[in-house]
Length: 315
Image (cartoon, rainbow, N blue to C red; front, side):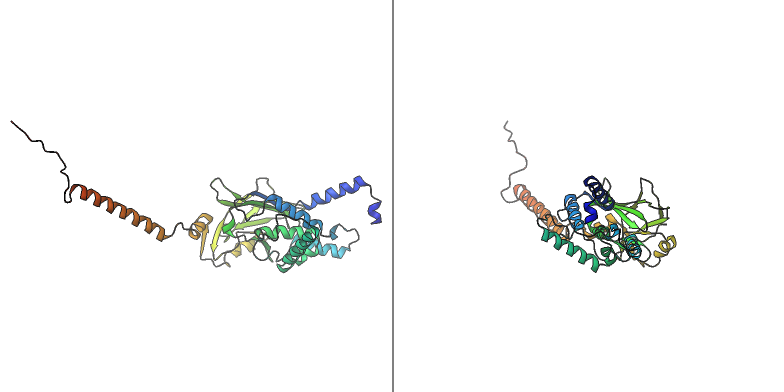
């Protein structure tokens, strides 16, 4: 505390701003929201700011031992088994619309830490504020590190929203992953990489990995992947430094089918039920029978008027 008091106000403010800027290299951006259950950009940013503000930052502590720093950075660069389970995007208790008191914020922090710890992210939570940011980003979209790859296991039924996850640590590099919509509203994945150290080859393939994995580069335009849905359900995207691992992966998934996203949605929601269309067809048929009966009675039934008037000729 005494050391902080000796620092000038301008220097302290600049250090404060730089720390937050470095932290928000990672983050979440909401681009297009089409349902009320998905948190807005304001809600996401507010939650991140308040939760991270309450978390210690051991990696910024100059007194931390070299061994502890190395351990935390290792967890941060490859968070093995984090985040397991379904995405937290629609968990309203983790992304509340309002935070009105300090006890509420502290309770939310405890809930986030508990959620991440139970989903394989203990190492990230132990790394302090930088690890918590990574865990929240991974959990939002359903990203999980395994022994050999990073996988994107979002629910294909909720990809009608457009969002991006930036600054995902993969070793010493940063990955940006976005779910975007084309002009027809069909989702696709966009991936880009920002190399922090000497470039390391990264590869990616979509669900099933039937196509040859693509090498990711630092080009600004990035790389796009179609959203494919497998039966049984498997992750939508795989990213790894091991090309052979991704090539072998296709032989270990044992899939029954691979569908384009629009085909999957058409099967999930095939339209109106058969009973509805049967009822409509029956009503149309009954209406035409009733109309036919009216016409028949008018012109062919008892007391029907002649179709043509007969003119009596008188000489």
